[in-house]
Length: 381
Image (cartoon, rainbow, N blue to C red; front, side, top):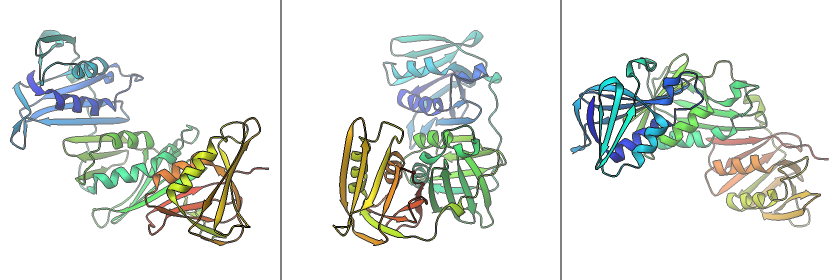
């Protein structure tokens, strides 16, 4: 194998596929990056057997030459060393050549590196997915869907199914739900798909986080292909495979209250900043992160956010609401969960609907019913 390639495209592809590579693998060859040169261009592959990422660099794009292939072939190089090395090469063109015994020579300007490679034939094959039903979502909407749900997945391995995001697809509607059983994030979107498409899958939160990092910030469509145990995301020159979680996702529809006793509308930023300030004193003790929210009876249209820590002190903050309707309010909750939820929402104003001091409450942007955040309160005595 022998080819030369533009250094910036090499770095970009190596960084993308490295996101799938972990040092904690039982298959030693998976700590490497597989590089394959064909007549069309160069393919880079990284995998940890749960996630696999493939990045393709064509010989030319938009009339510009990106790579020159002198001899086709393949090699697997240690990801950590190779990744560090390509970032430090001096010139804009990098030449890679595989000699005898998988010895790989990397040249750039006056720099020469010799790396020991491994046989590309030994590298596990990526899943073969037949593309009969492709779902399409613009990349920027897909990134939003991930950002607004994935933070709420569980980090505890006791219920593995909750470490993923539940995607249910019916026709042209996609519903994404994540919960760790203390909070829930939900986002729906219209997608482009076959009319009879119906899926219910759980994608690991870890996979979605990595996908989010490498998707472009554009409205280019991303193709999604779902099989029994794998999902494939296809962007321009990029393939991202993830295994799916096995098992049934709990029915969360009954968690979402339909009634409400108190409803407030507040400015998102003002409310977030007040919770943030209160959380400074809510870090210690048994009820770490807990803040209290109550309506101020003597000043209509105002809510009070308090937290106290016997060791440190107490904070009281007031926020003016655009509107308050319903019963008097007294509730405690995790400031961290509230801040995560507020940061995931878009829009300058939010509606919060409470159904009692110990019942879950719902946060939504005003004039947007595609996004919902739910938080369970904390019992404080």
